[in-house]
Amino acid sequence: MPAADPPAADPIGLLLAGRYPDPETGELLGADTRSVIVADSLAGDEVELVRALDVGPRLVVISDPATGQALGDRVERALRSRFTVQSIRLDRAPEADTETVARLLASVEPRTDAVVAVGSGTLNDLAKLVAHARGIPQLVFATAPSMNGYTSVSASVLDGGIKRSLRTATPVGAFFDLGVLAAAPPRMIRAGLGDSACRSTAQVDWLLAHLLLDRPYREAPFALLAADEAAVVAEPRALMAGDLEVMRRLVRTLVLSGFGMTICGGSYPASQGEHLLAHYVTMMRTAEVPVGLHGEDIGVCTLVMATLQDAIIAREQPPVLQPSTVQREDVIRRFGAVAGDSCWRELEPKLLDRHRADQLNARLASGWPAMRSRLAAVAVGAARLRQLLAAAGAPLDPAALGWPAALFDDARRHAREIRDRYTFLDLAADAAVAAPGG
Image (cartoon, rainbow, N blue to C red; front, side):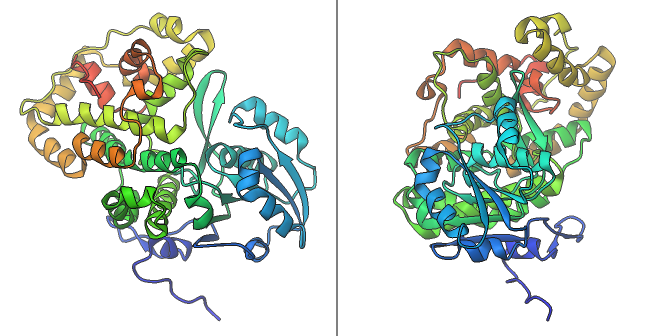
């Protein structure tokens, strides 16, 4: 018997059925994920959720002390009634770095059929990387609505001092118990709000690269989550008060953002200038600088990027670009020999000589009014984003995260050097526009 049609208004169901219509082309889009369940409670359903995926009888469950207490112990007890389960409990607050991935690969039993993550960002990324290296499927039981990478095709890892986004595979199953998520530490809920708030700045940056440099751009990832995002933006206080319906909307926004990245084959629709700023701080921080939650960092950097974008889009006259002056030795000196060489390879294609600057200035001179209009149409704006995060009690500036002013000033100037994406950080640097305060 054929599967029942998903609800017409449910983009998650349509994607899982391979029937989501691309808003630009009409092409039917799908997802490799086989099951996404968002429910008030999943207690008692764990075995059936995993059994339905048909991943095999031998599982490894990866958690840490906090996620184990929140959900991992329950998941492991349930799965042992049907599966052979290897339990790996990492240390508290594990790092998603190449060393931890190597230790996990050495620990996972050779005949394992699938990797089960119980956690959020770091645990999910580590499980993705281990499963991808072993060539086996991965699934996740979420413990916090703290980030949008659950259903993405990539994983973030710190490699040689550089934050990299590596292509892995989409989880075959992603399961969200709203009762567990609502009980997560408030900081982690605010982090999810921060990671979803950057949709606006990421879209504006990505659209800029398309309009100015003819780089590819798609509307589908933003159309996917528009309805759920609007519901979350309208009720941040209810979210923090434990309202399960608003939590459901946040989870759906995060899930659909991950699917949007997967559809595009990369993190373009959800990671642009705001992520470059945060990654720069992660790369260049000293031991005295606190390590925060990714989504908190992104929320603050989103406000900084939105302020910069607002200031440039408000100009009636187009920016005037100049040839680049940064040199390879500057980048090597800043980041060190190994990381600096990698950063230079990312930066060099974006650098402008006189001819290229003149070409782009001609495009800006003739097309700036239309560019401004399109960019403004998708921007939420710094003031509204600040209201959203403030209503949830989230950090609003770098000082609130314990970031020294000098470190973040360097991030404003040099974060563009770590990735090849052209964002408003690049436009400001190329036009010698001073970055306003965030």
